[in-house]
Length: 221
Ligand SMILES: Nc1ncnc2c1ncn2[C@@H]1O[C@H](COP(=O)(O)OP(=O)(O)OP(=O)(O)O)[C@@H](O)[C@H]1O
Ligand SMILES: [Mg+2]
View 1 (cartoon, rainbow, N blue to C red):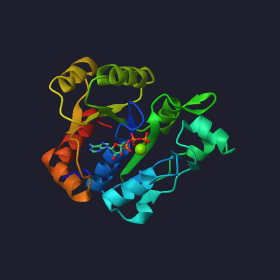
View 2 (cartoon, rainbow, N blue to C red):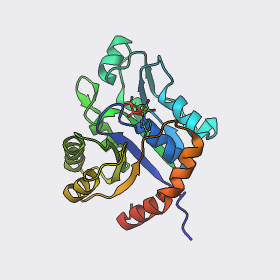
View 3 (cartoon, rainbow, N blue to C red):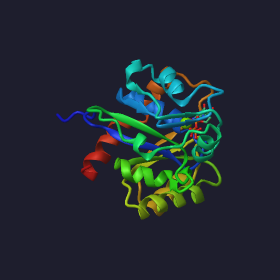
View 4 (spheres, rainbow, N blue to C red):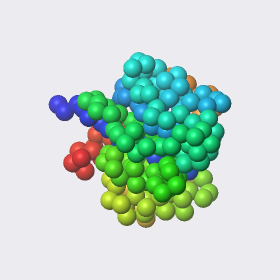
């Protein structure tokens, strides 16, 4: 039987900053026992995204690929790099060659600039991996999510599906699916105390392994 664990590589992107990309990345990394890469980390005051994923997923340290750039200020990469006087070179963002599952977490929303003349979404296109879009469950998500999907589709970036993060909404999942034609991979609930055990329970409850497998096989990626 074909294993879900063969070459399961995708990019976790979001409709906004602070939308839950890191939590959802940790969820996938844990469930798939995958590698994780956050190419650009802006803001070093709190735990970095790599540290959060490492703590929540408990995967072996060598599966956390070091960031290409670590900037001090929690602002858009193009400005954070200027503040630190360290320009982002596109050549330093090359996808690491990993013969295993990989979750790549982007910075902020899709259209954040990496330099003064280069948007993250254009870098996503050059990575040439499918994406999973994380969005909030609540009011405002229809506009943000449908705009994000339109921008991805315009560039022919493959979208595996959507993860809706937060308190369950009665209508938004249906509306997002109907307008986008994309599957909802998960409705990820708001957790009081985020921990590894809850991620494991949710992984099984939400049947993520089967959903991802069928989406990927169906799309023949
Ligand atoms: N489902 C959830 N339940 C509880 N807390 C959550 C949930 N999703 C996100 N959070 C919290 O919301 C905050 C933002 O989430 P997260 O760091 O995952 O966002 P992000 O999209 O990765 O942000 P960034 O753009 O900075 O990378 C964090 O404090 C996180 O713990
Ligand atoms: Mg993050």
